[in-house]
Length: 225
Image (cartoon, rainbow, N blue to C red; front, side):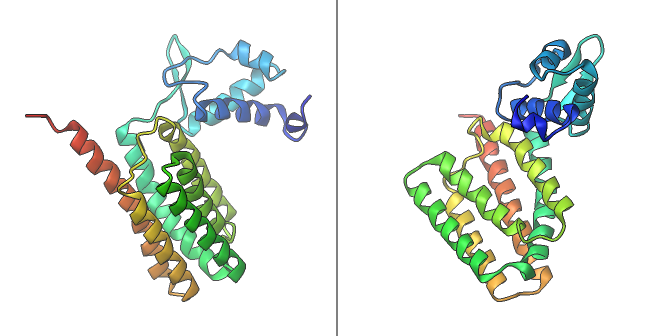
């Protein structure tokens, strides 16, 4: 038994294994999950695996199809945009909720992360840019008193990772604006601006990513002459 297994019950461990494989692309869209095989791999009976799959079904990562079984769900364009809309609302609220609790030390961390993000963009290290972007927001959420809210946000980020790993959600033209918006958020937090002001800025920050996604795909779908 691994250390990770010892800290989780069998359902939790099966859930962790299956979900990780969906997010990292080991299980691809449309793939059928074989419960017998997974049960052997996680060293459990079928019941914990079925319970884990049921939980992932509620998260819309898996669906049951008649005469087929559990199938991995991919994220299409519409689903991706809907998730970004939800994140815009949740992240706006979470950022504003976090702001009064953010210390000077955390402010310095945010500034350093944003500086690194800009450097990685100049070097065109896409993975590092995405990593710093996530770290920036997660650093803010460390100060959020509502842990259920931040866990929901993190689950949505991980769900969108399935799409990000395909590389089509990186927009070089958008990223400098994103870095500038990060700077704006830092300034608002330092100034202890009102809740509504910070919430709106953080919400628009995510909606701007949604607009960049829409514009890019509109161009890709525009017929050539």
